[in-house]
Image (cartoon, rainbow, N blue to C red; front, side, top):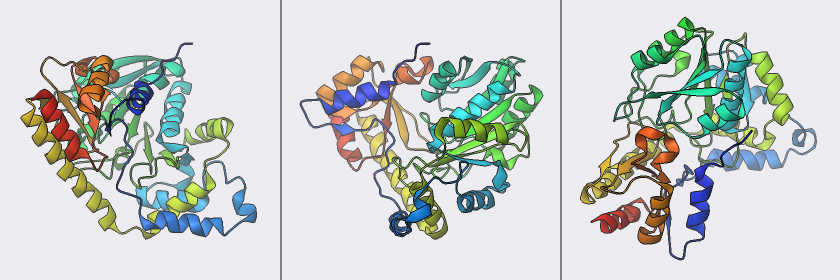
Length: 366
């Protein structure tokens, strides 16, 4: 089976080897720093020694699962702590296929590229549901695309790359469509702390045996290197997911889990609010410069990405490389996210140099 190497790596390598200074707006590595409790938790862990340096329970530290369960209003037995959101999504998609209710995933277009990559890896097929220009997903289009071949509907809210946030009505409809087709709704909610609209609704708001929610602390606590995520499964599906997790990874990093638990217990809500405010300011700064460059662009309601379309400059990998060389700004080609955004570029606003990057783009296209 052939797998395509994600374009992220090609772009990052090209930018790293460029002969000029480049502002990195490729990947979602938050730059604003972790809460103090992360470092404090690691220091506490380092002093434990002994048995605490050995394998943790495969499904995750009990205290962490208890903390997550209380926050998400589920039972701790439904939770698998994973190696980031990536493994959580893999477990959920694999579990959907193991139900033998279909071999097709419904994905949105545009789409986070790792979903179709996992689809290929699992030997399934993909059917794409286009979204509106602003990223809004019409449940009626999902309902029309769903069939007895649908193993799962995979969505991401707040959305990467569009910044769309799915509201309560949308999520209720998606759960209902999954139930009607005996499929799973897999809701990747990794950006749930970056909702600017106030409209975000988790799929966990709906009691159903047909939904799995995945998440990660990579973005929330600016710890993408820690690889601590989780999935919440229906009770009827969780045991096999735990077995697959054990066979694939044995367990997830113990010090990372310890630090995340400390952060959950000791981080002031002001930390999350400050990061949301910072991102809203960056969106405004960046889109003002895009106006000056004559570009069309998305106005995200969540997450931390802006998509832009420049006149006569389609979002190909070749044009991304030309932008690195000519403007010193590295973004992602729209073609990486699906056919509907092939003319666009995606920029991650997780750099303190957002204003500088915006000025460079305005000069380049001005």
